[in-house]
Length: 197
Image (cartoon, rainbow, N blue to C red; front, side):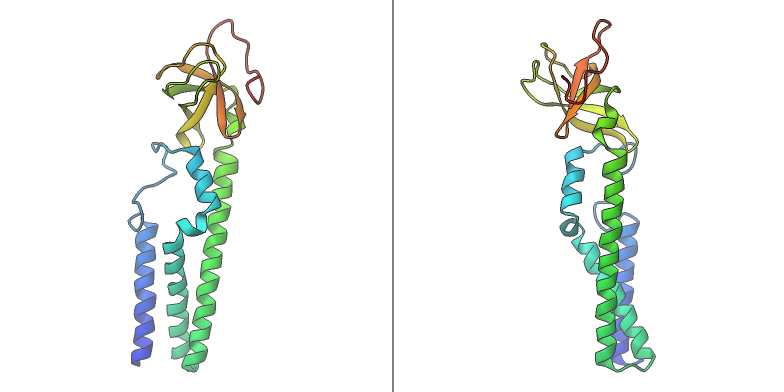
């Protein structure tokens, strides 16, 4: 092969190796956000969904060079002129990036709308993780079980007394990404409605 062909073979191989490491969980944070044992904040999912292109910029960069390197090399080996081969490679890289963005947007949409749809938690039980001030006076956090695993979520209460860490509560409503919860007692009516009223 010519030096130009070797260069594009190296680009494609290096980008593919980095992509493989990312796929195995070693290229970014080494963690699995969907693991049932992982605690994460619902707000972080929204942040990633709204700014996912910036969050995945390294992956997009790698995807572009996978397409560019291998397609340019294939074109060169097929006898296509270097300039036209590079144009084919750039087009393939752009397609790889767009496909990656589409797949990630679809995945995050499923995660947000299915696994972590907060109003599906109404009527379920949770445990207080960070103390919640009484009478809606402050926001704390609870740990709740969802299809995505056990997650940490912001919560408020209309109960007059402060809810302490470890107390068992019922989710009685949801408003703007915040759960409304109430201490579980025998004489308290069942779920009060979407906004905890």
